[in-house]
Structure formats: structure tokens, C-alpha cells
Image 1: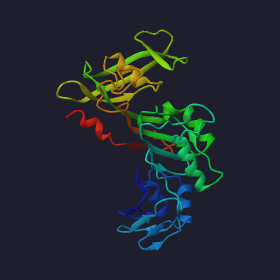
Image 2 (image 1 turned 180 degrees about the vertical axis):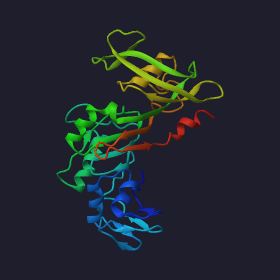
Image 3 (image 1 turned 120 degrees about the vertical axis):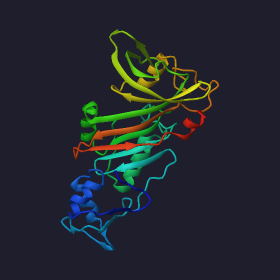
Length: 300
């Protein structure tokens, strides 16, 4: 997916193609309506000339430039960065400390939702933004929002079928044994105290499956960098599963030791990779967010 927020996107043509087909293939499976909008807004150039015809014939060697941004509107926020945007979806990279959506109705707290809502309202006063899934306040990484309520309902209903890859990175306490494997337990959430309990046998809870692989450990064995692939997406699943192995996520106040002797003042969990079938184009789109540098510094 090629999206640049502060600079133009430059694409080189390697074989003859119509402009519409070329842009769809190069812009992350962008919908035809989105390409038409780009053309109508005179944001596409072939060489140095603005091109508005969708059937314009490109030849090998042409350079196509797509100007950045939607009009003069950009999102600049230290806690949230847009990594992909089209007429249907917005994918963002969230920093720790930011809720996905307010915990209580009417709250004035700044959230990923409130930031994006203000952003789309600047583009179009009638526009809306809708939460598809969530990350915990202290978890960083990739989040998807829908631009319509209909699409939100569809993606929530078929989320497990749409998602083809979902990878997290955690900095865990100690060394997990075995260093690679699968954790399967049954999880039950106590809504009174917002804590999830894990059982190794079916006790009527929801089955939760996490595949994990240890990538690195610190020389003293105090910390491990762990890659985790979710087969299910239960509340607090990774945090509970790592705690059940005796290796809670560093900085986890709920299931671990919190900031007691923690080298990093945050929950060390990051949503690194998210790939899913785009509901409008039916093509797979994949996004990756860099592992926070502080995770690796602890392992030196």
C-alpha cells in the first residue's frame, strides 16, 4: 500500500495500462469511486500535466504523481497517525496512553475516535467515523475505523473472516518455556472489576487461542521479545495468556507487576501487523507498524 501524508506519491509505469486500472493496482486496492474522486479533484498528474480522464492510456516510462492530502486537511497529532485512508476506511497507528473510544458516554477525554471524528468533520461536516475494533489504552499499534455505519456493522460481524493476519509484539517478563508454542485456555470476563480469568479446561468461558514465538531475550533472561499471532480476539487475551505462562507483559498493572522495577513506563504490547480483506474491493490489504524502539533497548 502506497500512502504518503506529507509528500506526493510518485508511481512509475512499467507496462502499458489505462490510468484507472494502474491507480487501482498501485494504491492498495483503492475503489474505482475513490480513483474517480482523485481525478475529479485534479490531484493526478501524468508527467507534468494534470490528467482527469480515467481511460487515459499510459505507456512504459510514464511517471504518475498523486498529490497528498484531501484538500488542505491533514491530521497532525502526537498520539495518532493515519497510515491509510480511502472512501471506506481509515487505518491509524495509535500511541500508548490513548483510548480507542471514550469509556463512558459524554466523556470529554481525547480518544482516537474523537481525533478522527474532528478530522473527517473538517473535510465534510456531514461525515462520520465508526469504530471497528479496539486496542487497550496502553497498547500501541494499528486500528481500523469505518466511514459508514453500514460498513462498521459488516466488518464487526465478519471480522474473523475478514482478518487474514493479526500480529502483536510484546515485551514479556522472563523467558517463556517452551520458547515457541500455542496457548489455549477458556476466558471469562468479570465485568464488575473488568478482569478476565483464564481456565486451562472448558469452564463455560470463551475459548482463546494464541500462537507465540520468542524472538529475543535479554542476556540476563529478565525480558523476552515475543511475537504473537491471534486465532481468536478475546478481551485482554494476550495479557492473560502471557500471565498464565508466568511471563506477564512488562508494565501490566492488571495481570502482571505493573511498573514495579519496570524499565519502561508503559504496557509493552504493540499491534504490529494487520491484514484483512477490504470489504469494498475484496482485495487483501496489509499494514505494518514498527516495533517501539524502547522494547529492543531493554534487551541489549
